[in-house]
Amino acid sequence: MLRKILLASSLMLGAPAAMAATCSVDIEGNDMMKFNVASIDVSKSCKDFTINLKHVGKLPKAAMGHNVVVAATADIKGIDSDGIKAGVASNYVKAGDARVIAASPLVGGGESTSVTFPVSRLDGGPYSFFCTFPGHSALMKGTINLTP
Ligand SMILES: [Cu+2]
Image 1 (spheres, rainbow, N blue to C red):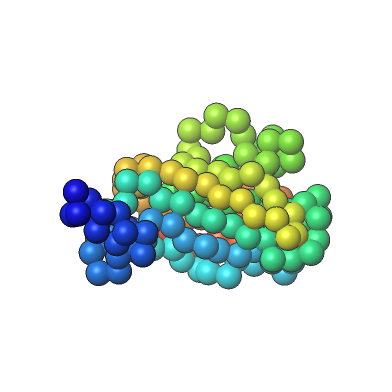
Image 2 (tube, helix red, strand yellow):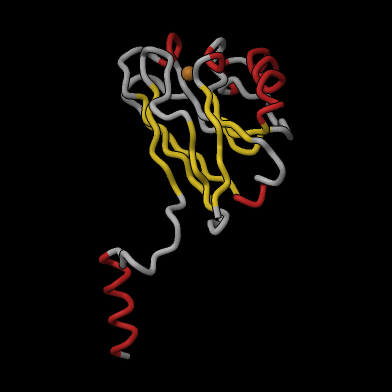
């Protein structure tokens, strides 16, 4: 019983040493059409991984919307062009696109969103994260690195 209480309290305190890898990352998108990171490390020890995206700009979604999509780097162009056809109502991602591992909703300035995906989907690669708002993936993209 005491053991259980100790375990519970150490979990609440964040138990630094024995914790598994961090299975989430916070990233930002801005009005300059940029993410604030060029790569994201995903530990293989995570079952699921979450990307939290904060749009730190002021421009509205219609002008400077951002999302975060995870897919094989080779699929960026195809996902992007199908996403543009799908339009803003679909967050610029084609519904049911099997190439998409994860896709968040589109957000505008001051808004946040997040997306979670099973790390087991990162099998092969290389993988990238990018924004599918029309024209953005030229600048708004980065690599996903699988780490032990
Ligand atoms: Cu964007």
